[in-house]
Image 1 (cartoon, rainbow, N blue to C red):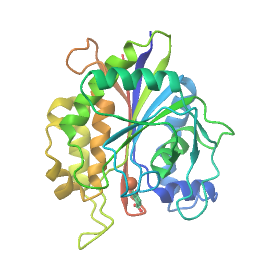
Image 2 (image 1 turned 90 degrees about the vertical axis):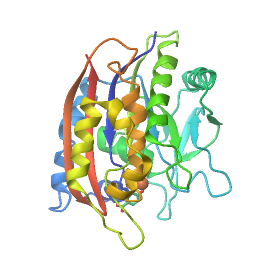
Image 3 (image 1 turned 90 degrees about the horizontal axis):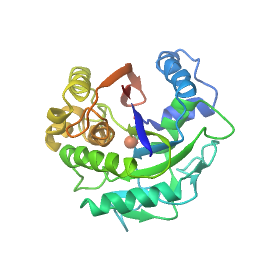
Image 4 (image 1 turned 45 degrees about the horizontal axis):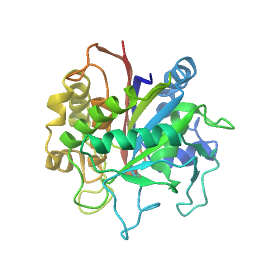
Length: 285
Ligand code: DHB
Ligand code: FE
């Protein structure tokens, strides 16, 4: 049986990808940020999964205004890094897990969530920057990855409660897959940031950290945070945080699953480009 053993949460700022690709990680601006991921890179080596179910958002790269799926699961055998205007990032292609992805699609759709099946897709910084932060600069990513794209760009976007419930459904789906696989689920994007309008540059350290506290200790209450609170408190792009609730909903301490969780790592840093960076590792124990 496949099992979800851990969840990882991290922001996905494109400038972080550029800092890695251009060899700037030890510059004074970036050094404190990358220091926060040293533990995580070692943890990834010590706890290597077979598959990462990677929840992220596409930034009008694979999906334009022509077609806007709320939830899209990548069922392809591979996913190529996208060109977001400066050429594709020089990172490995992402190797998928079509069989597990198809199984999850089947199970989650039968649990009444509408997923778009994506058999061909390029992946942008939303997916590749978290992989770089957690895995460094390998010649190949250490495991297979199932991309799971959430629309948090074009309104209407899904709220935290629906994302949390979807996480529970994904857990059931993984646990009904008949092969011994160690699966991690990642929630990415956030934390507070606003890239546009009169409040561009908004950062809210206090709200971010209180939200992290609640995500860890009382995820059901955190899931009830109304969509408008994210926008008001964490900025228009801070709403990316609802994706973290998908990963959190898949952990075993959440209603219906026995067992507890252990927080292995927590990091928060400002600034990275226009964004507050948050990062958590939670293990099922
Ligand atoms: C920035 C942050 C994002 O989440 C993003 O998708 C693009 C840019 C930024 O801080 O620059
Ligand atoms: Fe983003």
